[in-house]
Length: 258
Image: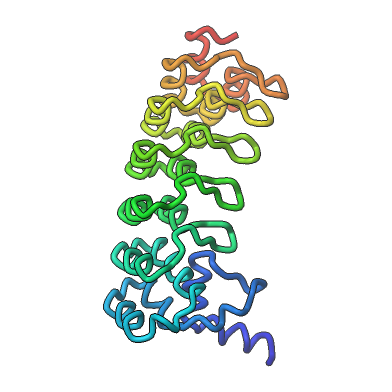
């Protein structure tokens, strides 16, 4: 078949549209997923509870585990809480992964689906699972300011000290983005405010570099080491100066930065 015709054909297929949306499949991936019933995945992603239930009731024994897992990933991403419950009851694997290493919980955290996230955690999902890029649900919530999800993960004991391969923590993500409330929540949860990445960066450096006064003030008040140096000898003050964040520079100098 001509490749152009082939691509047009699969892109009209609702299964492929949903799977690409959830990061479950790629055109270069395993094409065995063509066996997944289009309507089952499509219905799960669109929240068609009655349709998904009918298909499970009528042919649940013939629906492959991989098909249920794919539906669970899509339903979790789209916030279809009732369907998530039903798929779990039907045997879908709670920590199944997409090609990018996303579990249903990671998708729920990334895309701000607190109800789904709570269902998954109650059912035993791995709260500290990381995607292929090293991001945990806690990091996803901190990076995107998903405060309800962040707080719930903290309450349920998710690891606030987890790091990516580069050594980045959830607190660092929140500080870099300037999410002051998220920074406060993570500090209250005993996140290490002076942790350093492989390159020596700290949460305070990241907040200062990006000109975030609130996050900088919060970190200083919590006792962040103000004169710590990164591998390149940069400090929070030098970074604030380099990127011309005058107000942050003043905060740091007043707090004793050298």
